[in-house]
Image (tube, rainbow, N blue to C red; front, side, top):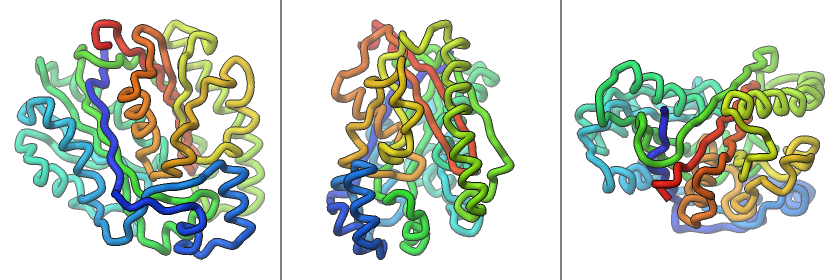
Length: 312
């Protein structure tokens, strides 16, 4: 069974308020009010002088400090931005070299935006099972440093700096992946470049599809939504989840704590939130939780994970 053996997150030292970040992004007073009072943002980390590698390497190095780097067979860089705005073609190789992972095959995964970590975990598990090599692992690295004009163009959220990494194994200690359900609605592929009608249609479609994949994921995992301890989504603001995560039986189970202190860190939010819950010991061993992801475009994914009791 695919297992998340370790998960870590990291942020720049510099912290800014909603108002300070809004000034950097050229946001209006009305938008500031929306981000603070409707989406629930307060502070976030942002350092204009930080480059991508300074952002994404620290959580990966923390994980590698507790494992054998020579056992890492795959290095996956999961990122949201793609095309002309995305990572350079050699970014995965650069990460691999800087981490000293000489035995790893390095590649990137994208196109699903902020749902990419779940597909990357599923892919890592499939590759490791196919290889059948005892003790082999895969390292997933997430996080992005978009250009200022790109961050400003994504005006529904405030883009902040944050990165996360996780170590994937087969049958190892940690949290077992019990199921994965995903669905892509390609008619909305234009994302932020879509028409107003596209946005209205997507908003109407989104709650129904989210509920469908949530139920599909728990059915495959052999549990129910009542059994789920935590729903762990990206930090896309409280209002984004209205009509879905404020309904029974999941209301009150959603991990929103990091929304106000980290804002939205592209491609990394779910693993950042999982790292927080892990380090604060808020997962109950043996009880299922759910990663729930939405990626502009639109991809919807749900993954049920269960921390095994002997792992604590």
